[in-house]
Length: 212
Image 1 (cartoon, rainbow, N blue to C red):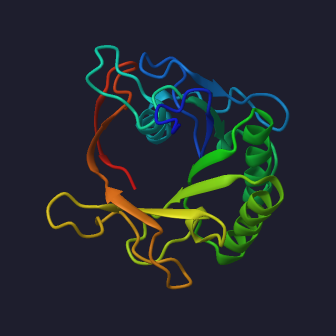
Image 2 (spheres, rainbow, N blue to C red):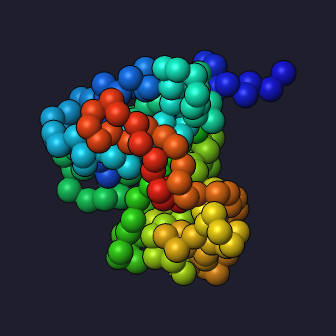
């Protein structure tokens, strides 16, 4: 039997900032705290717009049942890289993957941009090790450089996901078309005007235009 609702499944969401925790449509979400993470690092609600939108696409459940995430009964385990107390991005990525794994999430979504190639290689190495050693599945967005993807989507063991525009069925302007190795995304789907949980103000849902 295929579990289409995600019931009993935990999914990690790793981004620079953390989702808003008191959104009415995100009732099964846990923000990882403690250890190498500072729970008070992100105080400004708007800074959590993108991870809140991603969490809604995955597991949102609208109160009037008109909107639903892909797996509305799944649980979200969210980590903010900005709240890591360690000094480098590769260390923060490793800590984040460890944290969501320890909370029972083996499927992880990552949306992170990386500008430096050396940092890129170190982050990708951490992702590849987690997949190989712990059997994790890492899904990463291909954004926002348009042509070449830098970030977790370039890791050998990640699943790179791109976005289509709604007009021409082509790669959206905000979504990358190739990894640094010249590979296309593994998956591609409509990514514009997605109805999800964006907080403006808190607990008010509106359309998220770009979802790579």
